[in-house]
Length: 207
Image (cartoon, rainbow, N blue to C red):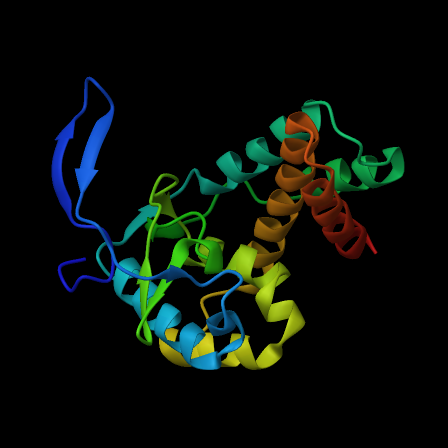
């Protein structure tokens, strides 16, 4: 962002897979007192709205891609219990594979561990997962963490964003994929605390 709220690209070498950005001042919001301040989330919501507004396009393949992501995670080694895995597969089989879905520039990990606070100003880092996805995907990690522990933070974030883009059906599917991916990925790298986060989310989703 030209306003200094995100790293500015200075140089890049695609073949070497290297890039250089300008240093951003500030401290990580995660673990900082700013993580409990609604104004942090209002600012982060406003920044996300600006990031999403840069571009839009329509996909007729997103439903297929989302379902395949979920199934690919379930096909990997994991410790999701058998009844839950079966229930998830049954639900995924009913997901719509066609229909238009609007995609926008998506950060992929929009949450306090990738926000900086600098004298009250929020900035954003780590665009390594950026891609075109539905806007709601940038709400998923906040929803299971900060929004869940304090609804005032969700309210402030939506104030900053300007509206709530989470359409019920697609939002449910997004949360299912996020939960399965968290549980399977964390199991694969041996991160048991994070694996438990995914397993708890799955338990909530399958009821």
